[in-house]
Image (tube, rainbow, N blue to C red; front, side, top):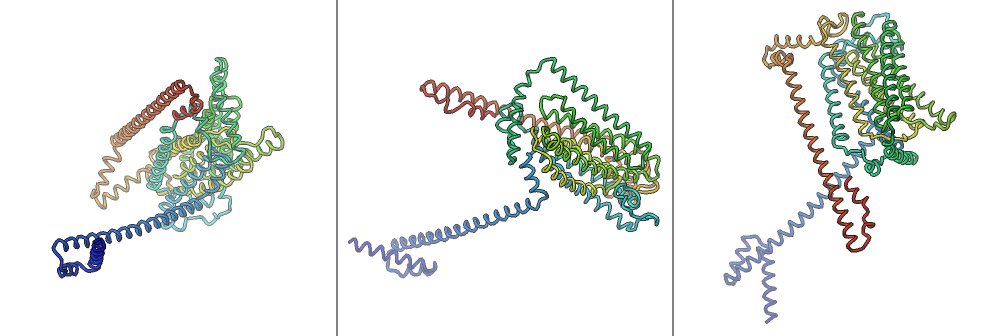
Length: 612
């Protein structure tokens, strides 16, 4: 009986396999021809359908396995290609290996100078492309052969003075089209604002407070350092910083009054020096305006006076190194801005009334300042770092190797870029000089750093210093340069030169916009609404007032949002502290209850670490 049942099942399975191999029409016909009852045929038909579904399921599984395998292989291939491209991009990126080497030997505070220098180099490349494409090329196409006198030729001295043969080329004011300079300054302002805003949000608004010693001990290590000497100096820096914080509150009233007197005297002396330098430069310009003495004296002051400011650190005692650096930065900025303000006043009020083509004369003066600033930057590296190395290693060994002064070197870059922004109106090709200057300066400073300097004994927060550098670059440097350019373009009692430039015969530079609007109105009428926008929007004070109000409202809204987020973060941190204290009390109670020293297994420092 059992054998008969097995035989029937085997025959049924064979029949199902035979029917599965047939088409649907053949399956139906084969079942009709079979001498079976309806129930048996129905059972066989559902078995066939089930077998077909099983086959389809196997096929789908195989296809899905093939698809997943191909997807995995393609994902791995694309991921490896992405890694290869990213690695190649980092390899081809300018000075990438040098940046890693500097960060490993000297830390992120020194690295921030070279990052800032590279950023300025790229910024000037963008400036050169804008001015060359929209100013120089159209001028060369319009007037390919400049009107150079026969008795004027290139002698080589023009590379230092900027005058002579360069006066008749496309180097100076003859190129300065209003719209290109205006668009360029607007783009520079937007780039600086967005860079400053993102850096400020990342490093100040959402950054953790650094006032407590636990943060400094546990979270302030610079992991980019790989040099053994730099690691030892960093350890000593942490030890001295923590000890200073512990002793900071022990000052008596007399000591505080003494420190206040020293600070007041230092600030009065530094301010008097800045005012005296500016006054002496003004009177020097009155008597020696066309010689190389003015840029020489200006560059010499910018080199010597900041070194004199650095001596104040021997007598002043600040509560932190950051405040000391900020004081030095403010003094140097005030000195450089005072000198530039005096020079701009002299150019706008004396040179503009004395020379027929006064814009080119101002461009030549700025060219000479840029060249001499570059020469004195190289001399500063020699005297400030190389000679200090010789003195500290051979003559007076107790002084040791000098440290790289990040603040002073960054301020020199900011001053150099300010000269380029002021000169962009009078000499639009000045970014070319800046590109060459920054490229040479990067390699020179890199060699001087590695050969003459040691890692800093005391490091500052590099990210926040970078934010301050960008902020100083924007204000007062960029804002001041923009004010000078706008003052030159809008001032009605300072008409453009009658002998040179594209704005001859106009009351001021901005009048070219009115002439362009009149030409559009005469050709097209007011078809596009440009004339109406110019007369009712651009020239309307109400429009600028409304724009200012809207910007202030938006700034206030974002500031309130950020303030609310900071309060929320503070509340969450306080909750973490409360939970940690609660757990601490529970563990203490539990350890007493079971008479087991579990408190030593889970120390309080681990629990309190969560709070930070």
